[in-house]
Image 1 (tube, rainbow, N blue to C red):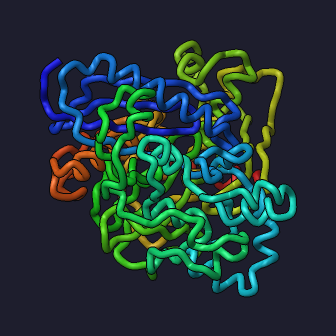
Image 2: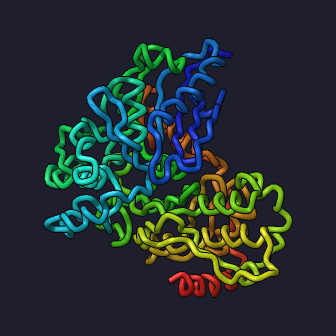
Length: 482
């Protein structure tokens, strides 16, 4: 392989761990992927197994890297919490994005819940390191006592790679222990979990270099000793930055196991009441939005339940039959929220439902109903984020659905507004590469990196008769689901 300068991008999703070597101009030279189990990453997961998966994909690409000059590594990772002891060993099973341990207890334990929610930028009490620690105090006090650091999943991987403890300001916001407007730990918020700021990592910008690959990590991964490693960031935010950059009011839907809706805003005061407020990767900007709860994950669930394999295989096998299903799936509908709703409903007790099932329905109807239900959930989120905007304001779609024109068109018809499908389906991986380029000094800043390497966008506009039909179906779905 050529000796060009390259960076290593890593995307830790709930379904898989991926890594790629990326050139200065954004070309992927090598990439590898390792699937995670169906129970790894959503509610709880095995952090040691995650580390093993990362080592495997990194070893796979470094073994073929030849003389390429690797300059930096950055990780985009799903939200969650890994508690480790003094020796950086995980304590119990780590929490994923849907981990609700301690949520009720924290909601009841805050002296002033309204003030706490304002500081954390949350519309409701969500999972995070502080609720998990609060839960452990009563349920497993020995683990609570042994906890030295509370980390995001990608922060745990950075620790294993570098021996350094660090996080980014956006991941810190998901702990429920950070004052998001000051971008700093708040001792009062942390105290509800029985720990102080000394048990949480220093907060950095996502593009800051926070450590270098150790000899032990180099031996496990094949990475060069001393390779700089950036702080990284949450996969949804990093993916949004990759496809939409830093333009205020850009709205991005990064679709995967969940749909993560992000709107870039210039001031915290612009946040709708039901949306999460986060510091953005670009200094001086913010985002509002949130993860919806299971959408693509529900499609995967139904594909497995119907013995059709993974979603890609199922959609390939039943593609013509699914495309033949009319809007409304011949009376079949569902709620895909198998693990509770998040943005914008915030009901952790909500569960999936299937209704209208008749003997004339086939597997194709079920999968089409799952696609429609995912689009309805996204419609709720988009309407919340864009309540005061003109209906022709587009939504940028990234992730798996952006690869399929039929699904992108379905989103446009259900949303009733244009959808710009990104040519970069692996948005979080692409975003991690941009972070690494900036951290390596190969780009001045994230805005410049995205401007030069922004993906092509394909426009899908609502089809008037179909969109009108879906407008009625969406209203019916809201009533039935509630």
